[in-house]
Image 1 (cartoon, rainbow, N blue to C red):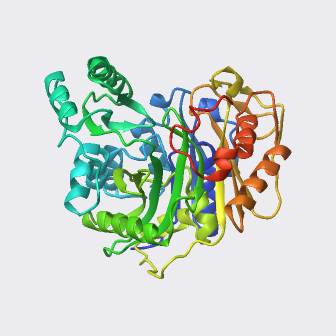
Image 2 (image 1 turned 90 degrees about the vertical axis):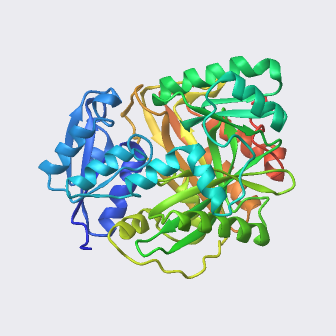
Image 3 (image 1 turned 120 degrees about the vertical axis):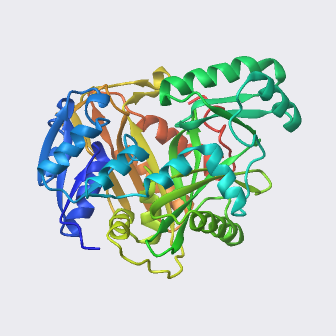
Length: 446
């Protein structure tokens, strides 16, 4: 397969900038697409070409397949990189891109469809020998079935949207009295968020850790894993802080989880960058949760501990390169915090607006992925993520200390951000101990 000459990036913000940087290093030209709200964004300024694809509303721009394809055809792009979010896990988009003689930098539409249906993905992984959480065999179609399955498994259970993500269409049910309302509200939220009201039910794992394995697959059936990321620090099922390696994973557990992830990915002939997410219980038993068929927001922590460029690898896999199957051993410890335009003093209320001053901390082992600058406007139409700060040091204690002092140096004025919140977490003794679960943030008064 020939090398790409020009890649269109069907995304915005820091991930669009990240892809532009990788393409530059590979001597690939880039095309940015943007909404009217993003006309002054940095990805528009730094790409080789830029095309406006519509108004601020994402359904009229970043989710508008026909406009994105028109931009790709006008600029003679030979590949499209979807980043994360928006159309990155849209099978129809992947299929249409391929039918227009362009390469979708990601897995096939069949793969996206299979892994996007969480109930089907679970059965696929189960057949491949990957441990899975006990639960319904597929979609739970009515309340009677929901009652029967929940009673058989025993409470607590969790109801999940088949097409879900980001915690939407998800409800924890502690007893039979809560079940009806939780089932119906999960269905309703899923219908609004994903135009698909289908849900399934799983046993709810108490005191869980959220640990994911980064995998990469080539076009020759080879798959490797690049270690784990711990994403346990969450708020309302939204990841806030990620780190690698996980405080609870030793070499033995890493091998078991890594081997399971590779086995699962190979069973579906996975191509490109992907993540297999597990829940780990208090006894270090792990269970498949879902697979993300795209690059993750938190990929920089893996890049820090492995020294690899995952975006460049992702592009090379789509170009037909063969994986180097040399065993990867993590070096040091990396932590990422997500800086959102939200006000933690007011229940994390969104805080769009004009940034009057912006400065990030720096120094050895500090990386900032951001698209903001002094004078730019954070629009209210999209995800509130405005920056990711990633640090790397010799061990977890040193990395936490470095992150705290890096955050101290950050100045963002004009809007509220989650920087003060992250500083408090870095000083929290429970976080420092590494002994916490996904309820950690909800249990704090910070």
